[in-house]
Figure 1 (cartoon, chains in turn green, purple):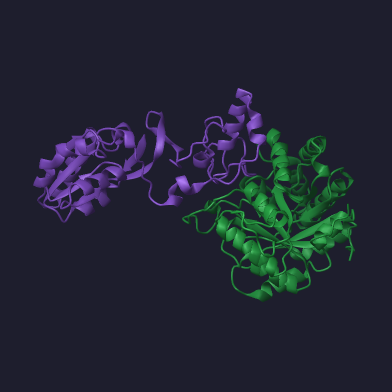
Figure 2 (cartoon, chains in turn brown, red):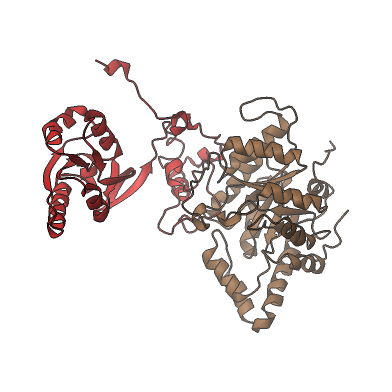
Length: 308
Length: 222
């Protein structure tokens, strides 16, 4: 059965290409040109650009708006949508709006808890969870109805993504959770940043055993480390992050001015291993506020140029 | 039980300052158990207020009384005479008790002396934890009698999220990850398969989404 791809990202994956996605965080302000400028670093470099939704619970330009700016720059966005700030009515409404604006990829997330943000006193919503969001988008697309069962005049056809964190506890449950997301209707998964390759391999092995890698495209997440300080911060402070001591020691083991190169080397080694792994369909490069680095990573990883 | 804690003394003092005759009214059930509003706390608070106002050279007459429950008219009634004598009531009940008092006594100002915090248990002496949100539709059977609606910081029904580490919630290192507890308990009970099933969006109508709730027991109405 041939599938008509919904988005460029889906086409790349359907064609069996190793996909490359990047990330662009919207600005803390209403300046469109910041999005335009940042995204230029990713043009022709990645297949699709994730646009974060008020990440770390800090108010930023909306994911929908910034996604449209990126679309207008000739790139394909992956609109991220979190369930922290909107109830099901707003989520469905925004999904319809997003589709009408030309957005075709969505990443369904819970969202960082607002306690980490600049407005921890805000009320959180969490009306539905990310699993419910995946199914909501799936049913709106495939059944053509909203959550009330109302038949939509034009259903939003989205290529549906979700996140997975192979490194969070409890590990044994991580694959069950992935299976649930697959059952809920997810098309692709982008994982948490991979530094602990051994653990990631084990997770992928379990996912393969459950037949999940046949049903969903898994894109492994990577983030180049800039310094030992950054690595330690991420190890200690960022929720759900697993950076083994060996990684930190590697960066500490080189002179300070070489730290960036070492971080790059680790990143490239990780990508090389991901490409070899059965069940991994691509890489998601999260160079946080370092978009200009992505082209170099993709090129040195041998993943450039991207398929047209 | 309903857990509450006394408001800061300065806030309480300021709230009663405009009045001359104060009734400090305790509640002898939930908030007594959590050391916030029983007769002992009434006595200590009343004494502290007397001392503080004396120091300020301000005259205030303070009466102390504790009823069994301020959320029931039957018990509230016992306070009627004292309420009439006072020109303000400082209620050391939960928010329900404060409002029950206000419903019963139209003319008396009723001030809250507690912050009502949650429905919980006393985990050990002096330590209280939130366990129930009173959502109106109990699904504890699925989750090994550990409530994700209340105890997961993101209320995830298909959890856990990706932020738990070593059994602790990303929100605070002292919060147990409810999902870790659920998984451990279901594993022990041999019911881990419960979690393979997709849990649909929660119906919040039985929670506050349906507006303030009312429970009518026809069989009990006299």
